[in-house]
Length: 78
Image (cartoon, rainbow, N blue to C red; front, side, top):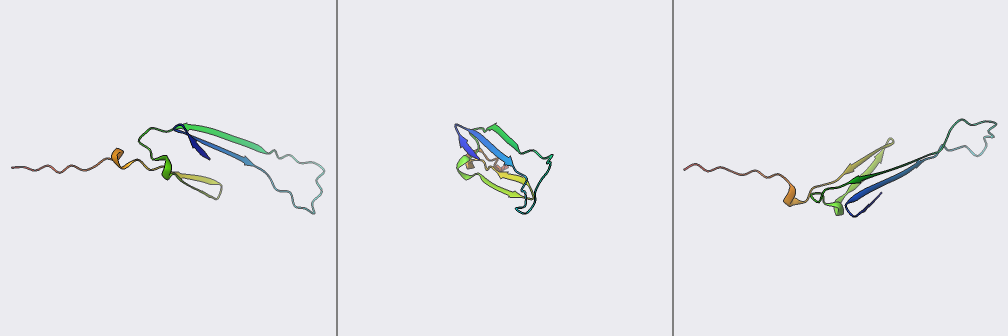
């Protein structure tokens, strides 16, 4: 994964492992390559991106800059 010019690039490759003591006569599995690019708005803080991979699922946390987060405004009556 990388971020460049407000774009997030994700690349991955799936490889099926073959045990060392196994001799294949025919294999019907293919290695696959995956790539994707996402445009990120300026509201996101790309320096704080966090990623985790668990059970084959990639989870991304892309926080917003503090200025871009919604804030509560109190109304005073008087």
